[in-house]
Image (cartoon, rainbow, N blue to C red; front, side, top):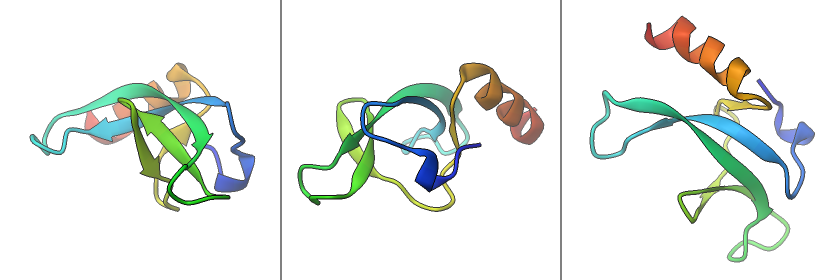
Length: 76
């Protein structure tokens, strides 16, 4: 799992995303790290064309395989 200070603008990452409408459904999604236009100087995840603020407890991975291994540990 990546630490927040390992992230940089333009980086492709993978996250375990929980569906907000169905909390029991999670999937691995590719996202991009970008500067948040509403919060200058803050980086965010761009996921489904939406800027998500990055929080300390977010599970962000550098590869799909890393995300899948963590997903299997927690959800399988």
